Image: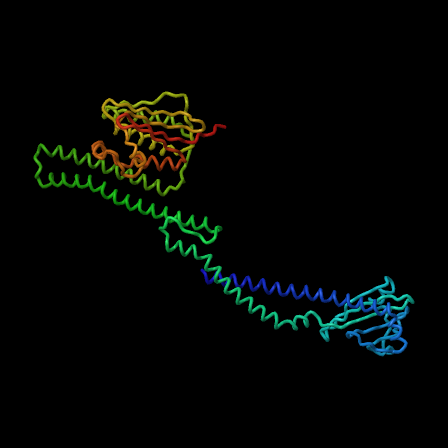
Length: 445
């Protein structure tokens, strides 16, 4: 990555330098051209003001001033004097652009290019007081000659710049990649220092994702271990009782009891498997679910009615708090039924004989609240944050006795997260527990 990065940086830098050099040469040549033309104007002004040109005409004197070509042309375009040529061999100059312009406007200038000699000739003409035209010309190299003259200098400068660019690009590439390499080597560190503030969000994002993946992997590992342990217990019980019956070691009066234990363990095993499957499905769902308008009040009443027999079996009274609030939310109906069932089932299991469970649905500002309250054994404050962990049980002995899997509240948490709902819990040991799920209320159009 570093190699590709600094190679590309070097290529871009060299390309920009070449472009800069070309633009610079063109600009300097244009400035040079302007300077040549200004010099010609100055020479014409000097010659005109000192009347030196009259001496050149009278005495046929060639001044050879700065490689200048001086020409005097009359009103009809006839050449009266030329410092570089025999006037008898020259044609009429009346149609020369600079002469024509000088005769009309007082001054004229032009540049004529010679492809044969790769040179440019600059002409400046000015109309004199007597109507004649004084023209001064100078021959200079073209832009290509100008470029050739400084080519070696440009090549040397380019080589030096390329060397510097390679060194700087390598250093910059190393510094840019350094935080990523540091992150790769120290993924488990709590803090990674980024070289540049601009890439710190990227480094922090990668770091947080790694920690999340690691946490997820640890959770899956723990979950797998817990699943193995939880499944082993009822399977061992089923296997043990079945073996006693199979070998004939069980007395006839014990066979019925052993069969009951096998049945109880089988039910526990099925419950575990169902909860594990449901949790696995929730894990991979990642927010993808079908939703409809659901009345929390209606679903709560149906669940309470369904659990009446189970509640009586545990000596618990379960009911709904009557309210006119329908609690309409946008949700997955099956998941909402599951969340109400698990909350109510837990409230029944961890209650006492003669206890009560009340299910309520009401509005709190822009939220619809599903609340399940019991007067059961309660949850110690230090345990309240952990009750939604998988297989976590506050009272393991009671959970085993009532047939709880330890996954009910974990399922509740997952479903709540899928619906962007909040969970609140209040509990006092010996007085009961109140769990509230806060859903977004559906806007009625």
